[in-house]
Every structure is written in C-alpha cells, then in structure tokens.
View 1 (tube, helix red, strand yellow):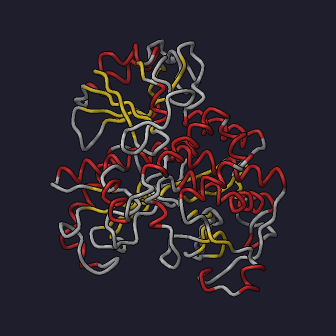
View 2: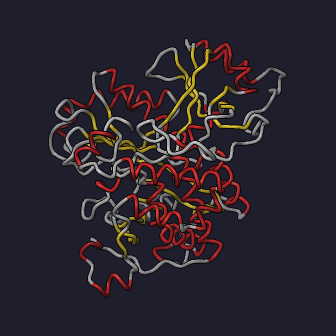
View 3: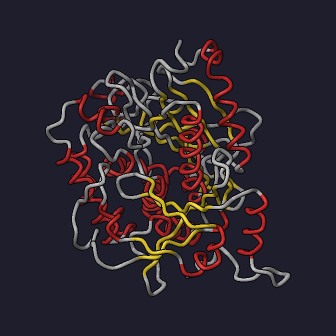
Length: 456
C-alpha cells in the first residue's frame, strides 16, 4: 500500500517507521490517531498504540466503507454503492505528516489514506482525489499554493466579548490565542495572523500557504488543536456555519495562487490586475463552477443561513479586486513582495466543508478553465447586492444558491466535478447532500443551528 510518500528504508538502511517511533517515544507519545474526513465534513479517527505503527504503516487498520455515507448526525444516506455495511477498507497513516499533538500529551496524529483490501486506493479516498488533481496540474507544468482561514466561535459570553476586531478583547483572550499559536508552532504549523473576529467570542487564524494536500491536512490539524486547547480552558469551540441564531457565522475562506516553476501566474501578466492568461483562465474556471462548488464548500443546510448578502460571506458569483462581498476576491499583494503575494480568495465556503473535497474541487474547476482558455468577465468593486441591471450583465453577477437543494442541482449537472471525482465519490457526495437536505427539511433556523453547532 505504498503510495510513494514514504520510502521503505532510509539511506542508512534503517526503517523510517522505526526512526519515527523512536522520536515520538522520546516525546512521550503512546497513541497515534489516524484521521480522515467524511463527505459530511466530519473528521473521524481510529487510534493505535505507538508500538503497532510499523504494521499499521504497512498494512493499515480496518475501516468500514459505510463512512462514505455518514451524515452530520451519524445516520447514513444509503447502504449500497456509496456506503455499504459489508466489506472493509484499510486506513493507512501518512508518516510524512505524523505529528505529536502539543495540546494532548501522549498522542500523535496523522492524516490517513483509505485503500481497498487488494492494495489499490479506495475510489472514495479524498486525499487520493487531491493527489490526482495535483498530478493533473503538474502534467500542465502547474502547481498550486493554498491556505485556509479558520474561523471559530467559543461559548458566547465566556471569552472574547467586545467590539469587532477590538484590541480590548485581548484582555481576556490574549493568553488563549498565545496558547494556540504556541501549540501550532510546536506542531510545525506556521501562523500568518490570528485575531478576534466580528462576533463576540469569535476568532480567526490564518496559516501559511502550502501544496493543496498539505493545506487540507493542516486545516484538519488546526481545528483539532483549537478544539482541544479550548476544552482545556473549559470552553467549547464551534466551527459550524452558524454558532448562534443571530450571528454572521464562521467562514472557511480559501486562498490560492497558481505557479509555473517559480513564477506566480497571478502576477506580472497582461490580464486583469496583472494576471497572466493562464492565471486568469484558472480563476475563470473557478468562477464558472462556483454554483456547483457551493455543494462542496457549503455542504449543510446551515451553510445557507450564513451565505447571505452584505455580510462579507461572498453570496454572489462575481469577482473583484479586494472586494470582500464578491465570492472570488482578487488580491495583488503588498508592495515589496515581488508578486509572491498575489492570490485569490474564495469567500463563500465555510468550516463544515471537507477540506480535501474543497481543494480537489477547486483544482478541478480551475484546470478546466485552463483547458478551455476561459476569460473572466469584468470585475466588480462594490456590494453586488446593490448592482443595477447593467452592472449585473457586464460583470456576470449572479446570486449563488440560497439553499442546499439548489446547490445540489448545480452539483449534479457539473460534468467537471463528476469527471474529476469519479462516479463513486461523486455519487457518495450527492447522496449525502440530498439526505442532509431531507434531514433538516422541516427544521426552523434555530433547530438547524442547535443541531449542527457542536458537530463541526
């Protein structure tokens, strides 16, 4: 089940697994948690004693294929095809990301790939999906750097009350944020910025851009670290789209830049705001697919309580330079960065999304744009909710889906995403989305928030 990321033996003839075990044992690690994220956006795990790592790294541990059909409430969308109760898969940790957990002494974590019993990759493995899309980009001489903004809300009234982004909020949350940054640094995660957010008790941390798979892995690790440190302070951290019925919600914004060799293709070109033709085509592909992509990045009915106009949620399909109301925000970068800072931010997604599905789907949509040499419409610089008819036509402004049901209709018709994911994964995502729409069909806003607040 070797996928090429970990060599069988090191240059000195020793086993990398044995060396990793020795390092982790020296750090007091006794258990290793191996995680994957299901189609509903829930991180799942199996754990093994550190002593079992050599066998697990080689052969994996058993895990049911039924998890492809799990919903946010742990019920199942279906039993046949995408979520059978029969059969078995093998969960194999990626040793290159094996990390001692700073906030949980005695534990280490690794993201895991899912394989069939015969050794081939499970067609529902989301990390394999990201690998395929990354290789498809490499075949065109392209690579992506991606990073997530992670927003969360702790128990309202317990920590971080005060003005939006207010310095005063550091009075009671400063030590908490320091603990988070220290823990992430100890785990090899580089923080770009961290701060109080808009709502009371809401915070955001941004991490450095990585390759697509690394970015998705880091997103999982960041959330777990924040959740664990919060509990250590007697707090609960919610990554749900809405943590309160009256709030604006937690986004899951994704930043991306497109590269060829060491050249940022969103800089120093002849296209809009310095984009190269290839960079523009990639963003045009993402923009075109955004209605279908909302079913990936906004995966639950709760997502559409957050995805509303005029609250910086990116509720309209349009793009614009530094426009925080556009679903696709373009950023040229600061003077002195030499073009390295030019990137695009997808603003409409939230924290309920499976980060592997997000980065893989964005890659698929963007690469389709490159293949077809798409061009962007005119950018828009104001709140698209207030655009007049001429502006909407000129900038191709459209409201993104306002319900999961509508997003699913767009997703179902997306040939780009169907081809990229493959029939098994596409069908499983579709089944889970349809069933979650039914699950919450008769729920009030308050019911939806209450049912999902602590699930993500």
